[in-house]
Length: 111
Ligand SMILES: [Cu+2]
View 1: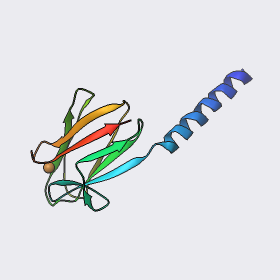
View 2: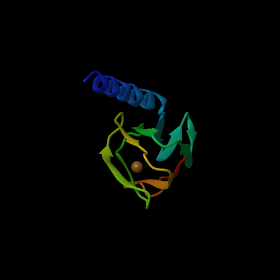
View 3: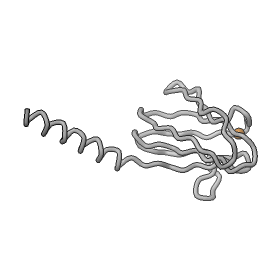
């Protein structure tokens, strides 16, 4: 019984340290473009387990999605000031787009 409890607490400790190491990138939607740290970006490289928080800074809706082979997601449409987050669990690359603005595009590489 003691061993079981010890094992369980070690496991939860391990899970906490993994979640601490993961990075959350913040990518804004501004002027119908993807913007990180004030710069328009067309690509972003991150590690498995990292996530992106998409923050809408435009006075209209965006709907971020991906139809890549690696994985598909659809964050739904969200208004100015709102954000949606997605975690990338698999290595590879994917195209991220906006369903409302076809000119919006970025490539995410997960290493
Ligand atoms: Cu958009």
